[in-house]
Length: 165
Image (cartoon, rainbow, N blue to C red):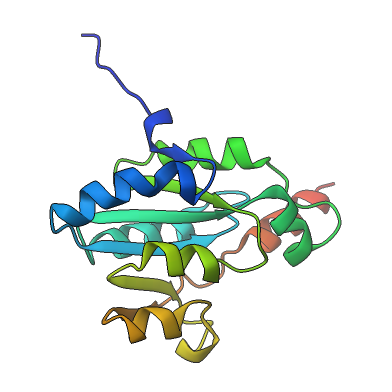
């Protein structure tokens, strides 16, 4: 069997390249869910939150921090994987419908352009701390927070790798 698998049709360098697809989804009354992150080394905590996010609507958009944005947030030596690698891994997940790269420190501008029905982040953030929460709420959307998988983070994985003897 030769299945056609095209992850690249889910990858968008910015909102401008994604806008027409979003417009189509909105015209079809899709429920748009948005989440974001660096996703530097994908682990089961990421997968858990992405699956839970996808279940909140019919289309899941992942805002992905660009390499420059990750450096601003995480510091020297990050990201471990470049944005194209991180985007390809996310796009390969069947429950992710689009990966849109953003270059700012937060996705607030991207969220204002997308205006998702549901904005999702982990419970490590209070709703008022989530970038774009005000825009989503003002436009009739919901902001949801998810429990994190305990004991797993990219920083912990990097620390374990650095300390292998």
